[in-house]
Image 1 (cartoon, rainbow, N blue to C red):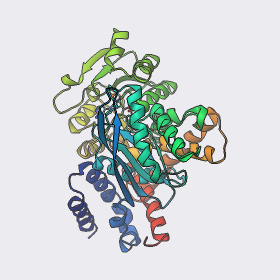
Image 2: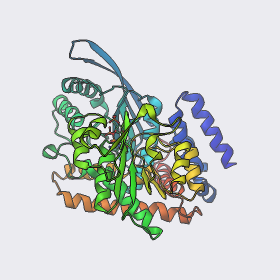
Image 3: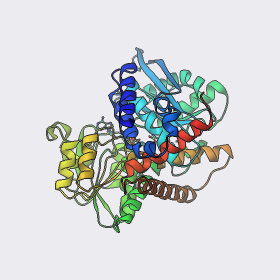
Image 4: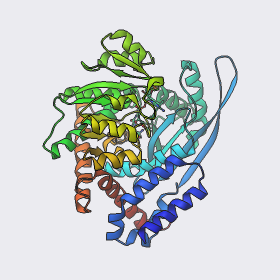
Amino acid sequence: MIDSKISDILQDIKESSPGQNEFYQAVEEVLFSIKPLLKYDNKYLDNNILSRIVVPERTIIFRVNWLDDKGVVNTNLGYRVQFNSVIGPYKGGLRFHESVNLGIVKFLGFEQIFKNALTNLPIGGAKGGSNFNPKGKSDNEIMKFCQSFMTELYKYIGKNRDVPAGDIGVGSREIGYLFGQYKKITGDFDGVLTGKGINWGGSFARKEATGYGSVYFAKEHLAVYGDSLEDKDCVVSGSGNVSIYTMKKLYEFGAKPIACSDSRGTIYHKKGIDIASLISVKEVHRDSLEAYAKLHHDAKYIDTAHYPSGGHAIWHIPCDLAFPSATQNELNLIDAKELVKNGCILVNEGANMPTTPDAIEYLLNSGVKFSPAKAANAGGVATSQLEMSQNASMTQWNFEEVDIKLHQIMKNIFKTAYGSSKEYGADGNLIVGANIAGFKKVASAMIDQGVI
Ligand code: NDP
Ligand code: 2IT
């Protein structure tokens, strides 16, 4: 009965929202994983929560026209999916990447609902972005694009309504241009975006938060099994915001990040990735990892064109711990088999939905511990909420104060997800635990607030 109800819902969304594969994937995982809760308590099915929760409260799609440096008019699509606001204002990042479409934004927004609930902070779920490709654009073009994007988006956001932040392709530079335009249009200096600069309303440790939080989570996860991060060889895909600060924190706990990647290639540096060089190459010069290999002759660069067929080079480098921290579906079954063969004991998701469903199944069946994204990467959005909190009280906490709060939040999320996995008979399966805990909170609030 529950299985057929879930299958009907999936069929409905496939018919009403064609071509949104990533969204179906995210919904399927959540709905099937919460079956132990649905069996235990009828109220969610009785109130038709499943059919309601998979439909965004509001979807905004808009045109973004901007002039490039040659004076040519360019047109992109802008999106904001305001998915669920029962526990707080909509909250979630903006992604600028050529692959962005409605299905991607909806999958990210759907995941964000439960992630945000898990932080135990009052934030609803949303996501947005554009199919704009920032690669190769001048600073001026990025600014023009951001200004045009905000000229439409400002109508729908607000410090108590919807508070966007960064994601792939959106960092402090883009948040600066977006914030400047919002302020110019509205005249308000508001905490309407998070990830702001430290001198203009930003929070210390927001930049580091997702990566640091991911490592705090991995530490808690290993500790349950009497293990630690000490002396572990780690591979961390990506070399952006999440990846860099994951690697930095890994060193602090005595682990060694030995490989990372970007859209063009993979670096294998057996003696350990040099974080200062990486920041210089990727954050300062916005270059490709090939430039890192030129600085370190003992590091091996593997071009994406040479990835083993169907798999990704980074997961074929032997490691103890894997931190997929680049993008969705970047770790597939071929990669999972390789990780298991090489003795990997934990996959800790820094990116959103980086592991394909068949890879997850294989990893779990092989006894690999698995930290799902909703729980493991929630430190970024949690610290965004700390930024909102500081803005609301017109104050700024120091780095250590924020970091201590972040660490505590990640411990609590682990405890919640692990505890809920035990309570519902899933014995340490954190996918089940995290999804049930997040869903319960949001679904109960939906019931409390009536049919709206
Ligand atoms: P960045 O843009 O800072 O970095 C992304 C990195 O991943 C880059 O190294 C990029 O390569 C690589 N990458 C992106 N897309 C692809 C692709 N299609 N194929 C191969 N490589 C790719 O983004 P973030 O670090 O902020 O985000 C990384 C992941 O973490 C995303 O899944 C995001 O949703 C998630 N996340 C981010 C949070 C945040 O606070 N920023 C919070 C929680 C989750 P290149 O350098 O060549 O572009
Ligand atoms: O996926 C995510 O949680 C983010 N990109 C961060 C969102 C936020 O509002 O800080």
